Amino acid sequence: MTVLSASALVCGSVLGAGLWLLLARLPFMRPPTFLERIEPQLRSQNVESRLLLADSQRISPFGLLDRIFRPLVHDGLASLNRLNMASSVLSRRMTQAGINKSTVDFRAEQVLWAICGFLIATGLVAAVAVNGSFSPFLSVVAVLGSALCAFLFRDYWLGVQIKSRESRMMAEFPSLAELMALAVSAGESASGALDRVCRSSSGELSKEFSRVLAETRAGKPLVEALQEFSARTDLGPLVRFVDGIVVAVERGTPLADVLRAQAQDVRDTAKRNLMEAAGKKEIAMMVPVVFGVLPLTVVFAVFPGLAAISLGL
Image 1 (tube, rainbow, N blue to C red):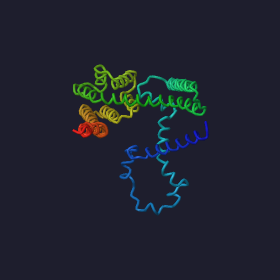
Image 2 (image 1 turned 120 degrees about the vertical axis):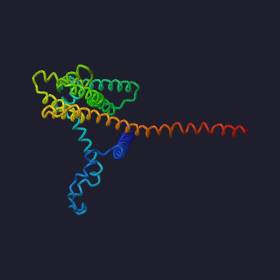
Image 3 (image 1 turned 30 degrees about the vertical axis):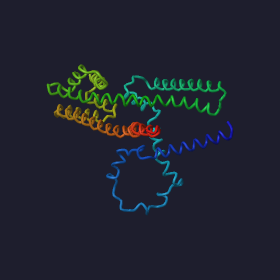
Image 4 (image 1 turned 45 degrees about the vertical axis):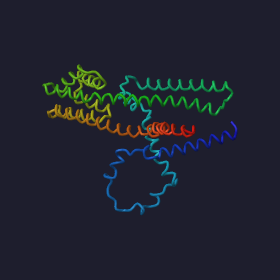
């Protein structure tokens, strides 16, 4: 690698990092979270102006760089928290994805993915080296980077599996809640309604209910089994569903109306999400129309006139 190519590599890396930083700081790339939206309403009123704060509280040793890179550091820490290597966190994520494997098996699968990425990158580097264009530094970076990306991609795919399974569970939830409410209205108990729903349906949510019933038949109280199911999921409607069943079992309150109301809330939420997605797609559809269809229409409209002028007609 010559000095010119090394300088070009460094300049390109700096330019790419700057463009990526500019893109990452755009508002649509950093939507405000729920906590950030409600923070102004929950913040205590302080009549003291921030301009009168001490300099040690307003100015950091890094100056302007601290304000630029602070959101990136926070995002990096959040990503590291999601990629936690602890076995308990990984076991909970695998349970959410419906994968019946141990954490050791999953880590071994990640290592196999990394080995596959390493071998594929090595083969590509060898093919490039045969043609005569070989750079040791870039080859090492490509091989190690491919292995690392393959290792992390397995964790990313686990997150995709979790989201896909949760979406299927939310799609099944309104119907199962209606069935359970119908069974309770017919005189079934909470456990009997769960049993009837599991026997008459199939899906991810019914599998979870079957697991709850299996734990109940093994001697565990229904309330405790339902609370463990609630701890295995991060879906708010399912957590409220379990809370409603627990309250009905412990206090004897009517359960059918609660289940119907929860099913209707989930359907309304799905409608709102669909309308929001449709609004976003409508704006995105303007891009091919404005930059693809409209220029072509103008060309079709103008070209016959230009052809007639050039022919002298």
